Image (tube, rainbow, N blue to C red; front, side, top):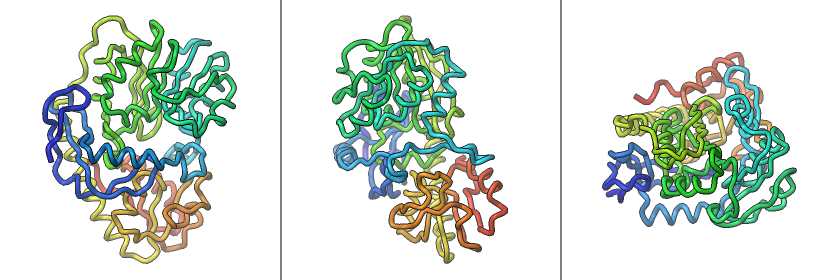
Length: 381
């Protein structure tokens, strides 16, 4: 397999990472997807990316045609958890809390939320800044009623977000940029839709901390903090906040429309080695969980990307899922029951399908339960 030009910077022949095509994959709405596809890294800008060939575009269209937002929780936005206490809150609520404490957001203005889904971020933002005027943009009108019922929402705009009329004081991209072929050009065009000094908020999966996200079949880009920083600054923005701890397993970047030339970006020289290490780690996770799954009474902790992928890699040899999200407990995922940790049968074996930095404290917190908790035994190095 050969990769076309980098879809972010245009450099020729990104380096294809061997071994990736043998993995099963998963969709961004947490459904299993067949093996195949390619993973490449640009030697120029360091961006990890899917090989955007005809097959990838076909897969992406098929995934979006049957996309079901938050189906594992009945339409409720996913919860994020404190790994030590287990306390949960919605992702948008957490993001707005951190935005309020870390960035000087004006008391009033206009927000455009690109890829607004069923309005979770618009609702959380409007609750914190009630004097703002809100607009959502989506590719279809499936959630029009829900979005336009949110206090402060002007309208849901259906179509290309770049065609939304007017200018804005804040544009948000919450789990949008990773889906877009040509992210640099898209960011440059959004730059022109901001008022002078306007803010851009970007939230994407952290593929440096969470290697499982490399397996999402419809993601065009797989960002590390350095490569996200580089793409945003190259599009004419001044980064004012960039963090990997506002929301666990995610990257958050806030930038201001800048009229001066872009500043120097962080080095991405070792990006290929980092991505190769994560592919090796994923191979290790498959081999490890295959051994665990031979035990009777085997379950996976989680019902999102990692657990869905592992269910497919194990050919369905999973008896149940475990989750702490109250919106998911008691439901079924992939034909298996979703249990609370306290409801797991004594002596059962459960693999925590999470990055090690999250799995370890959760296993420690749940250690008093009569369950054999297993978690990834190493970091991607």
